[in-house]
Length: 103
Image 1 (cartoon, helix red, strand yellow):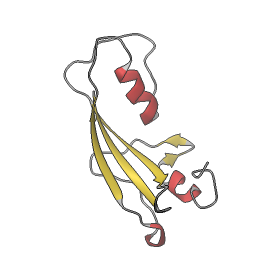
Image 2 (cartoon, rainbow, N blue to C red):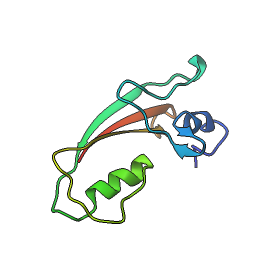
Image 3 (cartoon, one colour):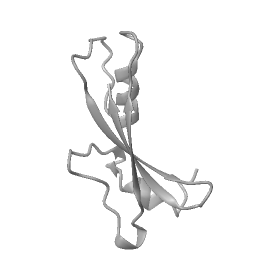
Image 4 (cartoon, rainbow, N blue to C red):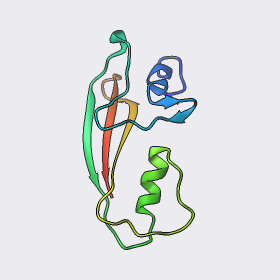
């Protein structure tokens, strides 16, 4: 609920474009006004498992990209970066998670 509150709305809008999750390029990141600047915490998440269980579909759903209705095997590794704003419970401060999914 924090993202939809007036305090969290600017952080949500920094990752959206036309009410869709924005796809950021390799050198891009969400732009916030200097007064709202927050730390970015990066994580690399490696997904592995049996073929056809939905690893690529999970990453596509989290990244806001269309999920292919037809199964096709991922060749090699696909890297996807997702930015996710959140408010930490312990400190009450906002932070932006930079999640690097390796599928």
